[in-house]
Amino acid sequence: MGNRSLHTRVGNSVPPVVPGAPAWHGPPRPETPAARNARVTLILASRPNVYSSSPLDRAGLRREDQAWIAERLDDPDSLFVPVWRSRNLVHGLDEGAPEAVYISGEAATALRMAGGPWVFLGLLDEPPNDRAVFGIDISAAEDPVPLLPNTLGKFVDLRAVGWGVAKPEAAVLAHARGLLHWRSRHRFCGVCGAPCDAKSAGHVMQCITCEAQHFPRTDPAVIMLVTRGDHALLGHSQRFPRANMYSTLAGFVEPGETLEEAVRREVFEESGIRTGAVHYHSSQPWPFPGNVMLGFYAEALTEAITIDTEEMIDVRWFSRAEIRDPAQHDFVLPRVDSIARRLIEDWMALE
Image (cartoon, rainbow, N blue to C red; front, side, top):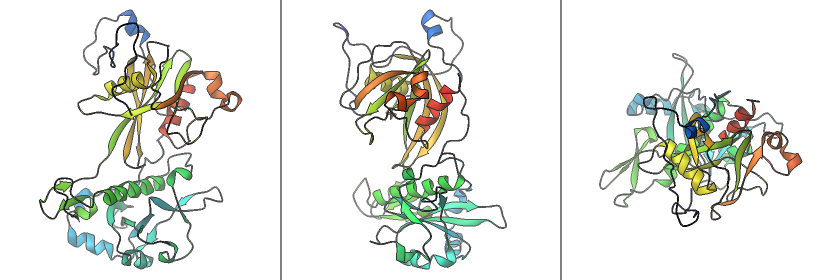
């Protein structure tokens, strides 16, 4: 992320941002000493990531069936997931047992009368007992409480909930937040500037003038734990809210770039470390505001660190012992609902 033109000079030469390593899995080649040093131990995902494991059938073929959508909108058994200013409705947070709150169609009259954008998320449960689930944006209300049938919970940033494990309901809340955020940012055509109308049950924004269609945007970002022996590379970004948090490196995939190339480029840009073998771990929806995080492990070929000071405050190597007891070494690990934490924990489990 950040400054893409940064280079670190070594002597009088400028090393390439992406070292010469294959970005695809082709036929076996003779193994060189460098390749042997660049091997990555296969580390499998130990469990699903938070915001994954959605229980919904997205039922994409139903989005164009306007009569069916209208019928489900009026069905008292349908469920509505309210979003207020990028916050979701959660119950039980103070008790340490957070649960998503869905509003039944029968009780959602005030929500719908508020006139905010809505989107069809999918179907919950199996036919014939399946129920349509809609996300609905009530951000126009200064106070959302009067729109709710009773005191059901409170609107919070999903990241404040601290889901320790993947829960199907967390995936539904993240789904609603991501889609409605996109809707709020695409009210006008990016081609001619005219207003857009929602189509396909909220999944397409179509310009009323030039008829250009705009689809939900998800930006892919690579996130990687770089390792060398029993040490892992962690950094403290300018963006981190906590002054002593260290996490894995990450960055957006650029046009015309493979995921492996993005991993190597971002690691080099942020830390000056060259990496060789890259191995996929897992992915995580991250609707803050609209990303999918693609998790990898990368094996370092070098050790000397040169940081990008525009983006990073500090980057350093941490031993397994230090990561096992971060409080003793005056730092904290990334949040428990993040794929960054999962990459670290699954690597630590190899001990």
